[in-house]
Length: 300
Image 1: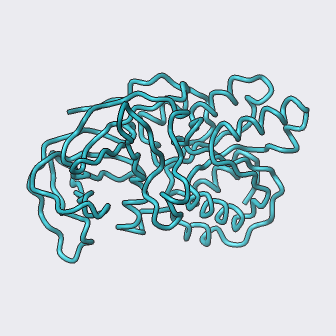
Image 2: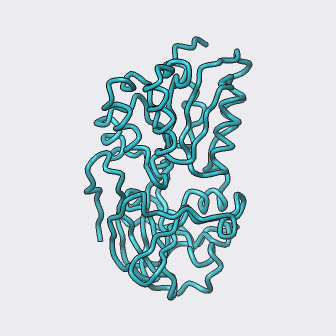
């Protein structure tokens, strides 16, 4: 089963693939998926994490297979089912699932953000919940699942240290990021890099409300110097936010940086069409700082 992105730019919609682990329903953003194939035997890797089933090469590319049931403590995974092959954060990963239900197109406004009773910053692996008919589908945080298994694949905060001592900057940066953990890591990294004036929001709608209000009041230059946005966020996603900024005469000159695990070739084209000034994959925090430097004309 092959997938491709069919959505128009900036519509604030996403396509969710619903799949099963036992009788439980889970979801993944179709934008992360490259293909779905039947389960095939893998080669075990010595001393690997317990959730790594092994490696295989369905074509000419080596892919790591992850036992999703093991990650979620949902019982034993049998040698059957399907592999959902994904690409995000420049990684090719296969997730072993029991079955696939289908693809649903939904608005980000329909995604319910889990509260603290469901998701803690440290242990939560759900980015949202959506109701379909008589069932709830939990959208999993696949980036966190992979980072928990292999921490070196996460945000490369050590890159900030390599930048060395830097001057402080009072340029106001608006950031839209719904992950509490990533929000803190990115904020801490930017502050270490000298960007201390940060205005934080957990979705695109709140960020846009702030930006548009500043524009209408004539205080945009004082309150917003640059915007950093994730793509996947409840209520309003980063592509919709970018489209709103770049299609409004009062705000279109604002530099917008898309910083997301979803920056692959297809999504990069979408971002370019929407007018994003820069797009980076989430591990590249050092490159994020360098792009900000260029866009706000900060010299090394």
